[in-house]
Image 1: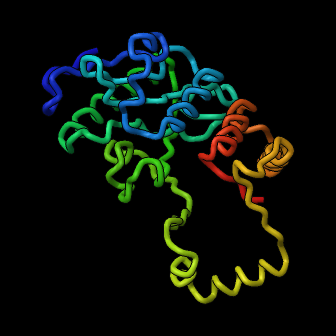
Image 2: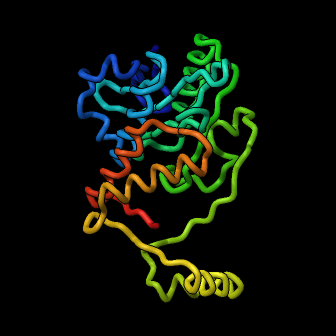
Image 3: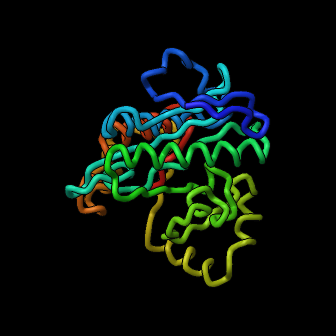
Length: 239
């Protein structure tokens, strides 16, 4: 599938993943996106999706976009979802694309996703936007929203962890500070980094995650992958 002269992109080619992985080996890193994000999406894809649903958009040898579209069967219903019914991540675009280039590619990607979903007779498509990873501040301007998707957002609060402890504390409401102070009297918190993280700590997280959900919501391999991020110094766990 080709898109000629798309908003300054000379030639965009949609290729299935991972069938063409050898042709673009190492090129995904040029997306200038967190490598662990792509790695995590691929883990879900390898373990649960139908073949030919994940794809990249290439301009010659340069990857412009990676789309981790996953199709599952949940309670007999075929749908675009992730890890047992969760939302699939938004497509990941090269950060150096201009606004017009990105908009043009978004249209191409959406059309291709709908085409794949129809090929598999999928009834629904759930999409999840992580405000930290995708750097989107206006949900109404996200690709699914522009095509009429139903917004079922949950409540989320983001904090800038690069601030000093004093500056962060000054931004918290007085009523919230009281709750935090009371919590410190009741609960004891541990922070695990690559320096003190253990396999036993990861197992406690996995078992608690399944207990709170009431079921296994994600493959074991993805939880093991998150533990590896902590060991690599790319994440932390709070208990």
